[in-house]
Image (cartoon, rainbow, N blue to C red; front, side):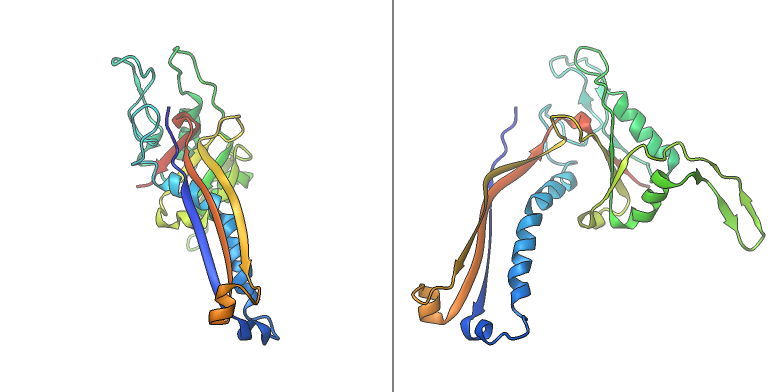
Length: 241
């Protein structure tokens, strides 16, 4: 078993009292709204960071969460190895189909199939439209060459509707990687631990020290939590060439 260590999230913004009092067109109010938006996005940020760190963070079996050497049976040194890290997998029909089939073929310690059914494709923004085409187009493979008027025949898209699509801008740092996840089980591939829910504080009273001494309003938020890893076999990461 693994423990997940909670982390402190804190953010504070200060606005001069006279500026806010004279803010007739609402210039400063979006600053407060942005603080609320960042707080709302905090759990997602931790989860996405965990995804990005999955090739170096250790899972419960002692291997990296995304690794090519997960033992089928942790207690058997001779156990066959399984991989949820697939190299040379650009986002196209055969690579995505292979990732789905790999996940559905994972075997448990008892030698029986784990019966994992993936339901979500997660991509960086650079893959948004390619991924949408793979999952939504009726036909795929059409490559019309305008110069010659010829093109390859299109095939029925067997991947249509096979997965939901999630595009995460924070994954832009890895433009050639994508993820296939199983998210509909009680246990999830990534875990958010909400130790203390966000608590907003506004120091705006005339007798608050910051107002009295510095003539400044303070708006802050504090929370504690962390992200960690569930079973590795609920996620597959594919690395493009």
